[in-house]
Image 1 (tube, one colour):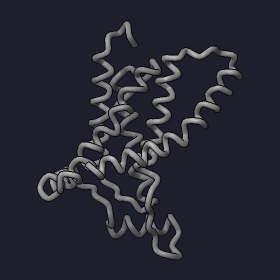
Image 2 (cartoon, rainbow, N blue to C red):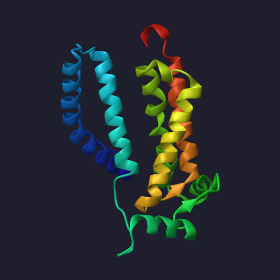
Image 3 (spheres, helix red, strand yellow):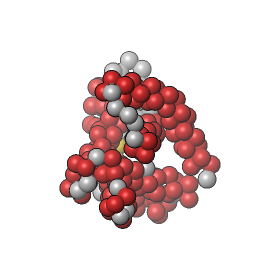
Image 4 (cartoon, one colour):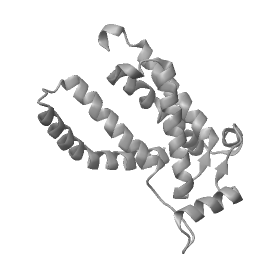
Length: 186
């Protein structure tokens, strides 16, 4: 469980740093538009922004390694040619985790990749009407995950098609949770 608490702690730190900035920007926006806040919506919107900051903290921010003197594009090209840290075979990482991974690895890599995208399938449909269809929300979740995996190629982090699959599954679970909310409460 210490690995889980470590991830949650690092997410929480980034989220806490971003919260005052979000509150300031949102307040200025509402003042500029001369709108009064609807507090339920504002809480959901703040939660969504904090989720996005936490997601970035776990997928895009963190330790990076690159050979000295090699720029980002050359390094990404080198990694792609060598296949270093890249899995394009669906199911390979999941299978390896289930067969050889420890409990902590399974929890972080498998359950974590699903659970971290549940809010992306749940909150946009709750906040905006245009995301209230599966054909809109599922591509959003898959697209965000694909963008993250692509950027990780340049950041020296692992690139894995199984992450894309698990993230999209998590987004689908979030959308299903949204669908379970009675329409009058949305």
